[in-house]
Image 1 (cartoon, rainbow, N blue to C red):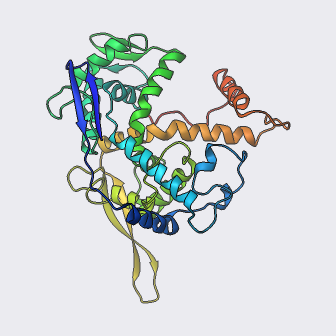
Image 2 (image 1 turned 60 degrees about the vertical axis):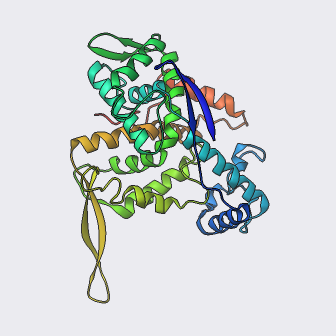
Image 3 (image 1 turned 90 degrees about the horizontal axis):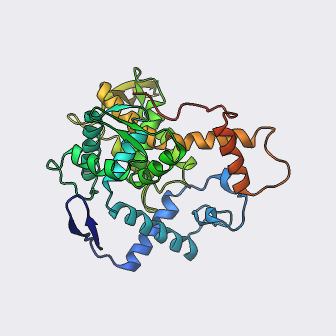
Length: 348
């Protein structure tokens, strides 16, 4: 794929080429069918959907789905695969990086130098994950250059001086920042869910690996209409294991977690079953995990609010349109009539 974009930071036209290995289409379909049969769960609780014709029907486990993989399921899976790959290939703008830092970490006032360092850190994380930031060169472009580009174009959203950066408290500011932040979400969605599963527990206790993966899969199930966490032929369990593995979050040098072993169940053979455990290494590691968790935390909060509404007496008996219900919930939230289940962000 070849894409071209004008970079206002450098006043140059950038052309980006993405090359992938060619693959026989019949072999690809065979692999996809095998993967869908092997990996895709079909939750029983999701068999009854409210609308017979909606975007929800596109998921692999819609109500008419059979246990065998049919042509329709394969076409749908290929579509998901294409969308996922397209998301991973898209360049991320400096505005998206800055918006993500503000909404994911600093919704209140932040020292300008700290904010610009965080923007550079996130740009390096994006590049390390295989992506790229428009106009940014690793270890060459500074965080202040990214932030200056952002300041000039978002003067109506952020208040900036020589010392601090602050979001202007108005609805339109958060809407614009959230819109731009979402382009970063696809690259870190699975990491964000794993981070949320970790920080939801006490940071001073040992964390069992099997519990973290179990909660991660549950969160992915809840958020399946919000994100594409992986390709249809990928295994979410194995993907979670990789992120928690020695090459990423438990890396001996740059990892966020320390690995331990805990004896659990006494087996018939006389041995104990050993369970892998994690501990968060230090405060810096905890801050990184909090940032990733904050990317998906508002989505989970929205689900909690909707579930609370549906099970409450305020839920109308007579059927209403989805848009009117959503509008009603938003109005109640803005007026303070809804108590939030938890704060939108993990505090740093």
